[in-house]
Image (cartoon, rainbow, N blue to C red):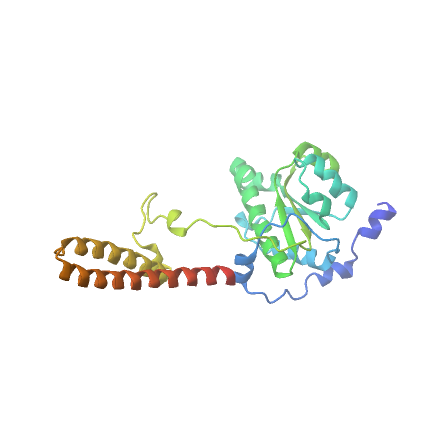
Length: 272
């Protein structure tokens, strides 16, 4: 080990410190606020935080409790910058403070589960581990970026990875240059089926206790009914004027109710 590497290698005490208490950030708060960060400040990330992120990753489930993940912590800025050339020129490597190369020991997975273990379980194990790492980073106020697009052969050579081990992903850490913007997520009712593929609930929002959606449905239904009734009214001037006032007033109330629902939705999104 050269002198420069020795300087960058944490002591046993620093590794031990990684097992100290994790921040008391709510689980759902971390899940809902986590975003991919692609630009970081110059502020260095404390090793203890990265070590705790790895520790959190190691608490993830794995097939048969194999725990066949392994980690290479990248503190060498030259190596981080060099990875830019082997990762489709992703700019995030130029500002990241530190990186973690997550690998899987495929021999262990294949020994117990055959080809499926090597091709699938090893990937799933590392993916579960990585998600825990990302959530821990969010809890620490760090930005993180999960990079899976890289030249595997070049990365293997750069980090001297043996043939029975596979590089699965590179996780980059740093302090965010700015708060990543929220991303639109698909609605749950578009993605969830019951008991067989394609079987949907008619009103899944009721299971999720999203009563605002139910009110939205009912308001739109009342609007349609109102238009149907309006067409049946006689068109004499006296009746027409009274019915117009009635329908205008009813439509106004429905429009106001819908506006209030939209305002509530915007308030909820800002809160997230």
